[in-house]
Length: 590
Image 1 (cartoon, helix red, strand yellow):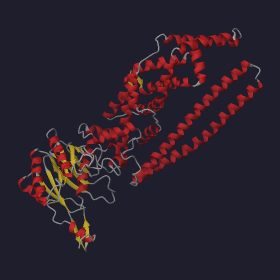
Image 2 (cartoon, one colour; image 1 turned 90 degrees about the horizontal axis):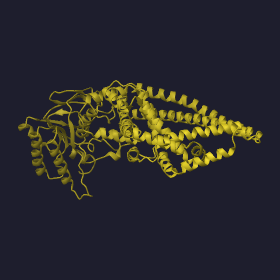
Image 3 (cartoon, one colour; image 1 turned 90 degrees about the vertical axis):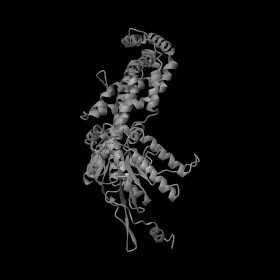
Image 4 (tube, helix red, strand yellow; image 1 turned 60 degrees about the vertical axis):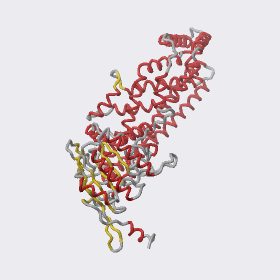
């Protein structure tokens, strides 16, 4: 991991140096703005009697001041981007040290009824989502969670290729994430899409020409006034006419401005994110197809959104008294901008949803690319059409510290079941979650913690953490029965890899043994594949009559009155249990 840490540390140094220069530029920028203001004030005070010169100086000062403000804003944005980039690299260094518990854990995506997410530590504190998630946008987080829960086995090779390509672009990934981190949305993208689809235009078509003609006339009147050919009263009359025309639609313009102020920042940031996507040439098929979604009539989507963002900013200026009086009075800017906005919505409104979804997709896939970059020793499963469902060499769990992880080899064929017995704490549950997470990760397109993996794509379904429900007045046993019924119903519809931890835990031993045996026979008859962990050694006898079943175990040894685990996956039936020993060792019983 040293080379990874070196990369992130070098990035931090580069961004810190650039940040120092930008801060210096911001100080100079502030001083320049102050000097322009003071200079204009002094000049106006000396020429106060000459109204034309005062007006000219005021106009020049305002334009210059606005340019400086724009430059200052750009410098502030650059500063914020550099701060975000620095933070991104600091986070990666922490995660390399297995310190990731302050990252978003995806608790909101937990679903006890899902096919597997509850059982494999997919969401929540210390989960795989928390470890791998680098999404910044709310929509990106949802997209990543959906990918993790999709249970989809299609196009795995294409997904792998896309993720590998992104893994090789660390600077680009970080740039995208830094820009996304500055996105401050007052309104959700879903609400924006609804507003665009429901929008009803109000500006008459004639405004396309009227506003332009009116603006030209106003400029001519101003020129004539400064040249001394026109009285100021004509300028006042033009202003009043502009007020009357604009006033007819002022309420609707303000309402449009109200909505615009809520969504402008979203479009400003999203056009930068789209521009980020546009500037890179993808080679993998999946990413190329995604990028094609932002091509609209030969014009880049980022530029289209940029135009819209500018229009939103202009319409929002109607809240400014100076703009409201002079912009509308002399140039009908409120109506002209409203017309342009409505034309934009008519032409591009339906494409916005695709653009938002594309940004969310890349926000999610950046997490996957970062995961690959941070795990160069992980292996992409080789997709196979052979009967072997999953064969792994040196397989481990990605959430277990590599220095402490014990790796195992295993191979499970189609329509085969492993029954795993073992002592308490010997590694059965960790092994079940390792196999389950390997399948989930493989289906997503991620590499897995193993030296070599051959995989025949399959969907996953598990039952490991059934709980009782006091709110639904359900016993533990009934909750487990519902889960098993869910599994039985699903395997009638599709092919699944089934992982079970201790069947029928909520009933007595004799009833459990008989019921478990019948359930295993049903699973075998359904031609399913999977793993069952149990403490019930009698269940292992099914291997005598069912050739699809193979017994394996994890055991423990008592050496010098101490319990020792090797956490190795072995063939056979466990003979060494440790419950009695632990009860005595912890002075619970004599």
